[in-house]
Length: 153
Image 1 (cartoon, helix red, strand yellow):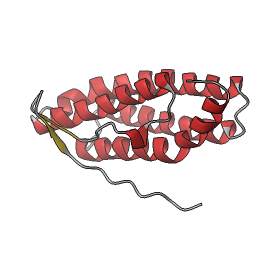
Image 2: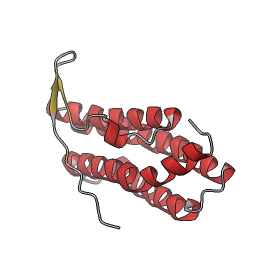
Image 3: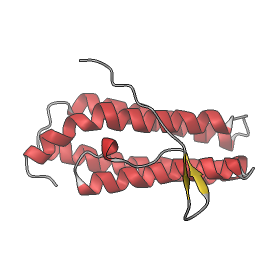
Image 4: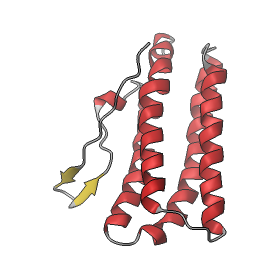
């Protein structure tokens, strides 16, 4: 199994005049409506941080966005994991391990931020962007066909 390379383009959204760091597209879809909707929200949070950075407010937005990401990723991961368990997805334990690792990393970033330790906003943003898009492309795409084959839409 080869590693799929993912490229990101920054596009100009004429409607809100903001540059998006990650645009939703069909390559990110797992073809499960609720999961795709939640992924779009996570991408929106990353784009919110990117937008705040572009307007010089990245540090101010960091605390709010990290808090939202911690809360939302836990909710989203729980939803995905419940689907996998309900339908006996064979890759569940491995996938849960990926979720647990990201949760720890985001909580660590949040702790460092709260303790006043220097966080470079662009590094945090790029870490989150890369993790999310790679996770969807390489891990979530594996359970998508399995779950849709079980009737999950």
